[in-house]
Image (tube, rainbow, N blue to C red; front, side):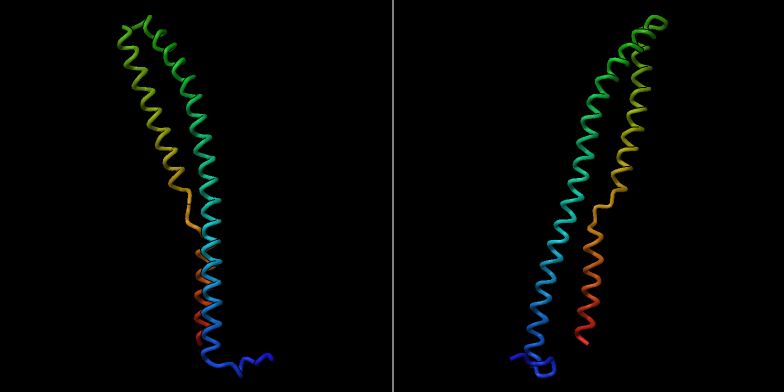
Length: 130
């Protein structure tokens, strides 16, 4: 026999609210876990691509640097040639590192969807308590 909302005791209503809130919290935790897993996977793939690309580019760069040092070594002393090329390469490397770090800092890893739904759930719970 179904009782109407008016026939239910306060204890029944609070019990139902507790069960629904518990279910809601579990669902929100699962959503947060899923969202963070997706973001971590995306960032992981990007970092992997950066690492492989960086290693290949590094090998090519070493060959080019050696060619530039040898070429300059025919004009100026070899030690000065190596020093000049080393300073230029270090400067470029520093710039690239700063650019990569800046890009990673801009990546927002917060579970935005979960935060929004938790706020909505809190508002809903406040309304239910009135």
